[in-house]
Image (cartoon, rainbow, N blue to C red; front, side, top):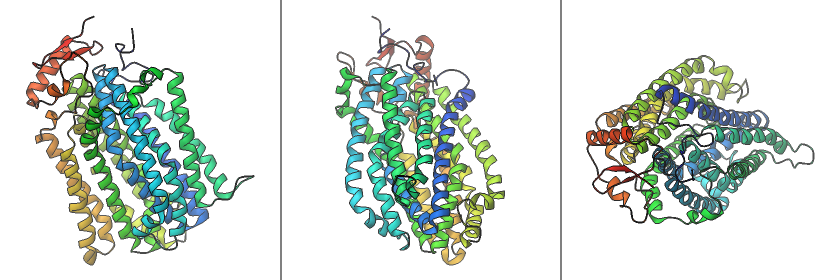
Length: 517
């Protein structure tokens, strides 16, 4: 059996997300993502402990400001990565290796080009960006030295994230976990060595934490690429397939049209976070340090939502490709249930044990510790609503419906959160900032549930990711907006008569038939 016809969902560490019990399949698929989120959060927390406890509150505030910029830059291309992931997952669902490789090649070229441009522009502009954010004067020099190195690390970070997303789209969450474990382990070792100049290493201070990030991501990216090549992974582009790296105009158009709205969602979140930290900066260094420490704690609270939501997106996309609409709906319901149970189970201990947890990042006699406990009690409840929204958005995006989730997010953040935080400060004081989190998150959840129930997201389509010579243009077929009932009936019929491991083609009249030799 050649590469073009072998079942893809069973290749390597990939999991077939179109079969088996939805709950069990989703949970097993999500566990490595959750473990990856734990690793990333632990890594960030360990770094924050080193910085906050040994370099001081100004250094911790510097890292918080610089990291907000880093998350914004990652979010700026997040949408294109998500679009690539959906194209790959849908291709895996219909056992289309050629379509998956075409999407991967174009995405890699796009990410390399964009990340290099960002690195070249961001390095000299770091101080200006931080000053525009209102970074406290005491933290500005530290933040600049940290951020300049982060800009250099951007290409490796972008490509590592893209490969992780592509593998998850193929149904493999274990491989990205192991390579992330390598990155985190190296980072934990290198941060104190480079910060304090142990042995022959130079004493770099806060810049040492950023240098560790650069080194670890380069090593992790190189190791993942070497592993994919060594295993002759089905999605690896060998020497005879390097032509896929030339951007395909049709795929690039699909990535941009579908990816830009998804990317704008992350940009809106990042910009809102930048606005929020700017509002917090106005309250003084104590509140900024308190907010920075609380963000470390919130990373753990949101982990179940992030893991289950990411798993739901890949699982739904594969089932869309396979025509299993019943499993798409079941994925959404199960994902919401898991999020409510897991996130809810974390909120209570987070409030009860906040003083001890936040004390890891702040001195015991600091006023910032009292501030952090106060704001956490108010705002942490927002993640219960956030989890539901994250699942719904992931599921509806898996079909190519990207505009309405963007509008919902814009309304929640910029129509509710920011105005609430600004307008009610004369009444609530600084608490207006913290109450804006649960209020806006609740609005986003209600709007997302309404769109899932009454919206036409099931009729959306990603643009065609494959055109074979002599076959009908799939874009013409896939872009036809059929009623949801017709879609469900037709795709269910196809699933019943044609196993997903059998190659098939779309005909101009809308039928799908097996491809025979």
